[in-house]
Amino acid sequence: MSTFKKLSTLAVIVFFASTVKDALYAVSEVEQVIITQFGKPVGQPVVNAGLNIKLPFIQQVNAIDKRVLEWDGEPSDMPTKDKLYISVDLFARWRITDPLQYFLRLRDERSAQSRLDDILGSETRNAVAKHELIEIIRTSKNREPTQDALLLNETEDELKIGVLVPIKKGRKLVEQEIFKAAAEKVQVFGIELLDIRFKRINYNESVRPKIYERMVSERRQIAERFLSEGNGEAARIRGDRVRDLNKIESEAYRQVEEIRGQADAKAAEIYARAYNQTPQSIRLYEFTRTMQSYPTIISDNTTLVLSTHSDLLKFLNGVDVEQEEAGQDSLFELEPSTRLAKGDLQ
Image (cartoon, rainbow, N blue to C red; front, side, top):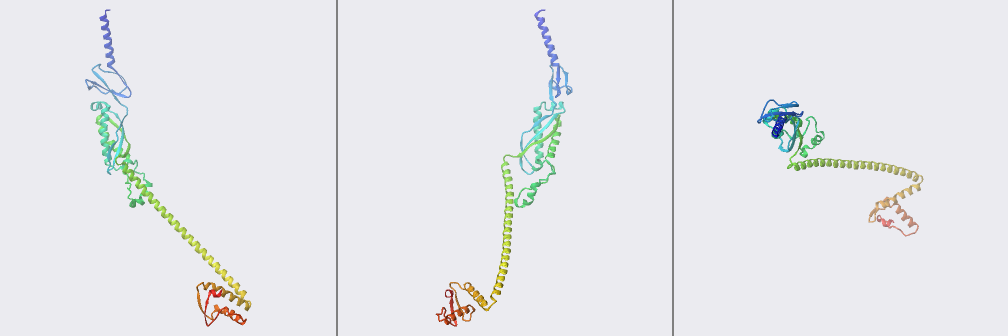
C-alpha cells in the first residue's frame, strides 16, 4: 500500500471518528439540553439522562442546569412605610422549568441572575414601602411583647416612648407577597421561583447611630423612672420606720411615767403612813418636804418677798424663836415683810 493510500485511509478514519464523536452526546441527571442549529433551537429539549444523537458539526449542544439554583442579592437600602431607611438582604431559590423558553429569552445563567436581581429587587422595594418596619421584622402577628407593653403602658405619656403598633401581617406574609409578585414575572423566562427569604434586615448605616442613641435614651429614661420609684419607696419605708420608732418610744415613755407615778403615789402613801403615826413624825415630814422645796423654787439669783405667815418660813421662824429663847444671835432678821435669799437659807 502506497503512502498516499495510507494517509487517505487514516484521514477517513479520523473524519469518521470525529463525526461519530460529534454526533453523540450524553445528558447527565442534573442537566437538560437544547440542540441548536446555526444558533436556533431545533426540536424539543432533551430532559432525560442518557446517550443521544445529533447532526454532527452543524448542531450544537447547550446544557442547561435543572437543579435548584441559588440567587443571593446584594444588600440594598430602601424606605419603609414609616419613613425609616433600612438595609435589606434577600435570597431566593429557583429552577428552570421551561428550558426552551429560558434559552430563547436568557440563554445562560448569568443573564438569569441579572434578571432576578431586577425583578426581586423591585418587588422587595415595593413590598417594604407598603409596610411598617415592625411588620417586616416580626415573624408572628399573634405574639405580644409583654415585657415592653408593661413598661410602655405606664410610661408612654411621661417618657414619650414609641408604641408598638398592632401586627397585621408579619414578616412571613411580606415574604409571600414578594414571592407571589416576583413568581408571576419570572414565569415568562421559563423559570420557577421556589422560595424567597429575608436574610438580614438592619437600619441604614447613616441613621444607625441615631437609632441606637434613641434606644439607649429610652432605656435610660425607664431606668431613671424605676430608680426614682425605688428612692421614693425607700423614703416611705424610712418614714414608716421613724414613725413606728416614735410610736414605740412614746408608748414606752407613757408606760414609764405611769409606773413612776404609781411608784411616787406608793412612796407618798408609805411616807404618809410612817409620818402620821406620831405628832413628831408629822412635824418631821412637813419639815422635810418644806426643805426639799427650797432648791426647786429658789435659784442663785432668786429674790422672794414673803410674809412672816408663809408656810415656807414657818420652820425658819421656829428656828429663829428657838435661837432667841436660847439666847443666841438670830440667823434671820424677820419683819412683817421679810426679804429672803437662797444664799441666806444656806
